[in-house]
Amino acid sequence: MTRNKQTLFVAVAVFAVAGLAIYMADFKPDALKHAMGTQAANPANPANPANPANPANPANPANPATSANPANPANPANPANPANPANPANPANPANPANPANPANPANPANPANPANPANPS
Image (cartoon, rainbow, N blue to C red; front, top):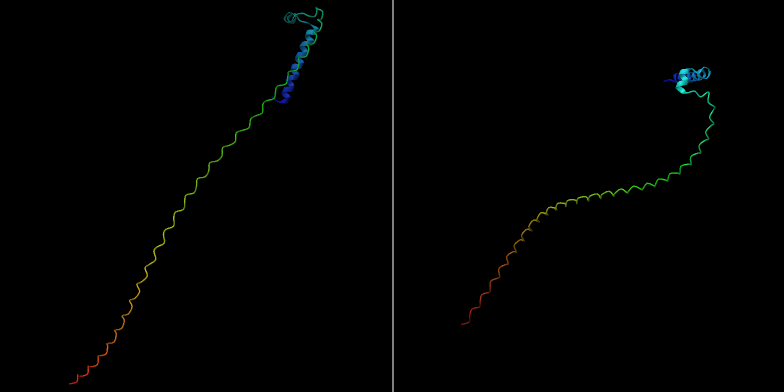
């Protein structure tokens, strides 16, 4: 509902209530007299005294403080790195070649012949 329609509705309602009030004050038709009672002939009732004020409500207690959240658990340790594999053994060095044989020693010279024995004297 737009604002103009709302304003029009309120204006019509106000004029309807005001018109009914003026009509009842001037003419007081019998149908309305019996429906609402006739109070015009009765003297006005005195106003009722005002009711004492209610005492103020007490303040609500403060809410308790919220407890702290628990600490997060520690992260698990990282697993150890695996050991590096051993290096392969170095190959054996080749055998050294055999030393050449020593040359044979030269033959010893022959011993000189013994001189002949002298002849025996006769």
